[in-house]
Image 1 (cartoon, one colour):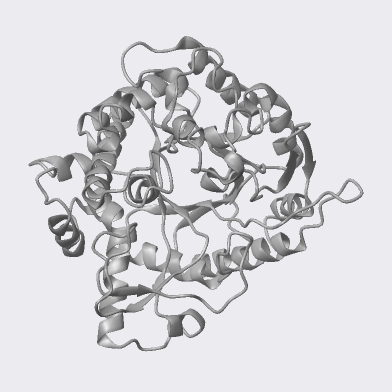
Image 2 (cartoon, one colour):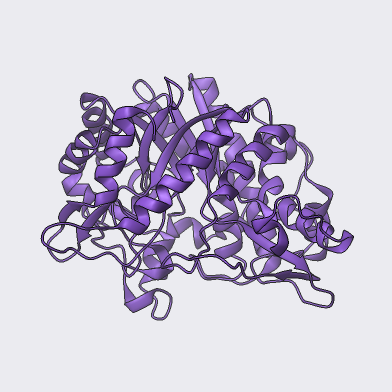
Length: 456
């Protein structure tokens, strides 16, 4: 089972999850610093203060990447390292870290994929309203320009935002992520301003000469319970309407404006019921509709729903009235997420049909399991099976015509897993947080061999 000759193989991480060094070299405070230090927000009171200490150990980590034959490494830049207050003067020490990181990657023949925003908003901007404040979108464009000015001579692949749905609806809707606010109107407003920031930043990057620009979304096929195991199962009219609405809220809310310059009717209706649409100003959709080259796809499991007359909207899903979020009869990961590999091929084919002018890249796919080091090894057979199953579906999607350019496993390292703290391990490399010792798991060695043969 061979992949295209130019297929990109790599791994991904995010700044707050691995870097540590939160008070070094002029870095400012982020919303995740504040959130994780607030009792009750994160499992076991964990924080990203040290995490994987990647800020100091990046050279060794790149050595690991080289040993694993990675062709690409997707990392995010910490906005508070670049602008401690979210605007104004640039912190040269912060830029210098990413400058060294990029040079080291290129020396190892690993292509850097830079994500500009993976949720660590400067706390100073949150104090002025965060993503509910329209001005934050313009500050994001300024920050994007500063990073490009430093790295753009060597970095060709750029992502503006990572998972704006999570940032808006888990951060401002149900409050389980930073900044921990719980207001559906704030969530809808934040989603729009994140998109506005994407459009403004994408235009700045393009004007400065960026060759490849990507928007990364957490997408999933939205299925009825019967469709999980039988794609041909015909839903009732009510169930079909539920899947269409949730698909619009999860995926089309972000990709339709970015690719086509329009909002789905279901999204506008949800906004009207949750604070109104006054925050969507004339000309915004034209700004958001900045051409992108790739859609980054983060897939973990399908979204399963059915009609639920009389149910209130879920706090993370403004506009989801009368929809029941259903359980899935499938094995699960340590996160409790159902393992449905063919959801990935279904998703990729659907996206390639709905957005045919834009290429695709799997920017995150992976699983948390309860790993342990035994005799100097980590035998994570469950993760190997998970990755193998999903890569077979990636290959199936390519054969079905999906314009898929690459696959980046989540994650290179065990790390700070947001509200779950350090109790969930997604890495293909085990990290002992007390000693910072790295041990490549069996899945890492398996992935190295997949890359070596460019196939399964």
